[in-house]
Length: 122
Figure 1 (tube, rainbow, N blue to C red):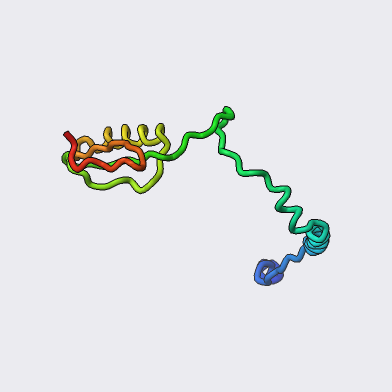
Figure 2 (figure 1 turned 120 degrees about the vertical axis):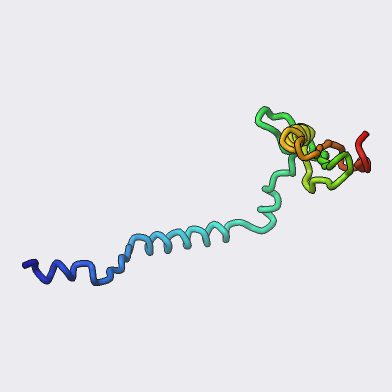
């Protein structure tokens, strides 16, 4: 016959308290307060770098997202994808869209943001 003590081993709840975490929190909050006191609001604005043009992984400026994709169904304009594209992304999107939607009579055409889509395709 097993002992009664073994049955009650996991019945009681145990709250784990780590005293080290409480000490770390107090030290961190003191450090943060002292750092904030040292800096003036004007200093933060002076240290902010000027807005630079985003660059790609090779250091070249990224192309502007000034293209859109127009969708046609059975050669009639249906809608414009409501998202800015870079020229490369627009072409890639239109190519894949045309490949997958050809059997449904849908076609995607790229264009500049300011260019209005044609009502029908020739």
